[in-house]
Length: 158
Image 1 (cartoon, rainbow, N blue to C red):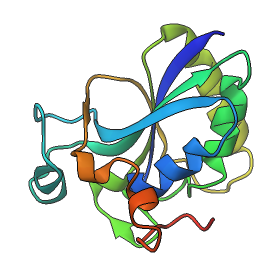
Image 2 (image 1 turned 60 degrees about the vertical axis):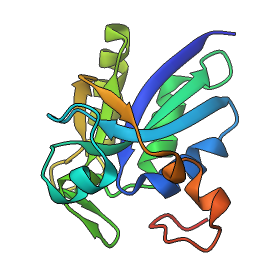
Image 3 (image 1 turned 45 degrees about the vertical axis):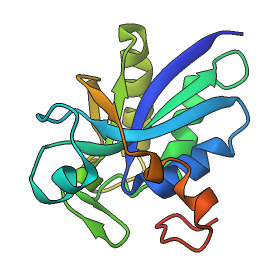
Image 4 (image 1 turned 180 degrees about the vertical axis):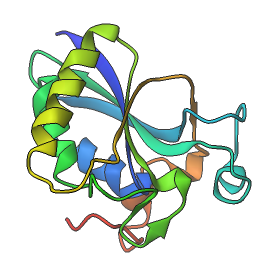
């Protein structure tokens, strides 16, 4: 098994986490806050204090079973890649889309996937493509939220 990790921001992290958990080859996920300016932020800080973090899902996967291009294509199916700072009914910088990698070898794969995606749109893409600067796991009540609250809000339709 070749274990890899990528961080994907796709709006509200509750639905994104559930979606990624359903993909064969995904080993585990964790929701949290990425690439912001506040150390160890709380949900309330991210939501109300402009910390610059994006609600993000850490996706650990078996790269022998699930290749990064396929994972990214699955991610693209549940986001609006042209929306700036929102997905669904959620608005704010914390709901932006982004692909944050820790392995520099993933950068060309991410860039190629975004270039291919851009061909399908008349507008520019708003998906960030950056190295991960930081990631702080969200509070426990956010982890696997839609498993705990099946009727909870989600911009992704299952």
